[in-house]
Image 1 (cartoon, helix red, strand yellow):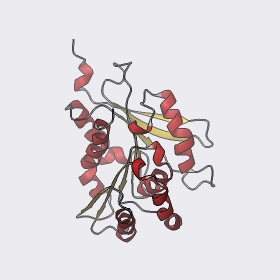
Image 2 (cartoon, helix red, strand yellow):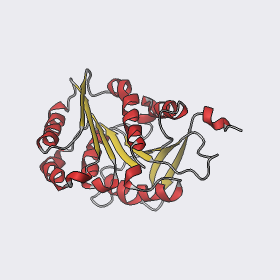
Image 3 (cartoon, rainbow, N blue to C red):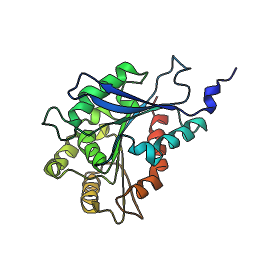
Image 4 (cartoon, rainbow, N blue to C red):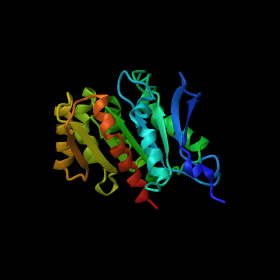
Length: 239
């Protein structure tokens, strides 16, 4: 008998890593049939929101709808999406958002949900400030992610002196899949194109898209389905 869940969307839960101070909260999308297929394990996509926004930003922009559409139509294998709350991004070094994501949240998700807990089945993406985090964390921890996506990234000024060093430290055969996009009127376009130019100069394979638009939710909403498709395509290339 076919599973009725194959025609129903996934669900969104809320959780927290209580061992951090303060607790690291998150929203999580569990794909269709997660509760019925108890032996199934799933790739995980971590999506980071922009400054002044909350962890539901990607959901409002249509990321979950896009994932449901791909999965229910058979165009992508089911996957989990985690939306971390980054309100404590400016905590002291060693306790801030980047450390929490790498050292606390990812291990917690792998221990408490049925993930495929390896680099090949883990991706990281972000928009605006979340894209800045992805530049930093995706390059410094390249061995943890098979895909990194930066959508209108607001690259941190403090990171600028180190980006070239981070790029050259990644072994060429260990580069994740890389996506960068921005609107042609984006206020961050100068730093974004400079970053893209460094990747090109060092021969790093990457997808680079410049579309009509600015640094706004109108722009991201227009392209969110394309973003989710790109992440999902990475799972299809992984055993």
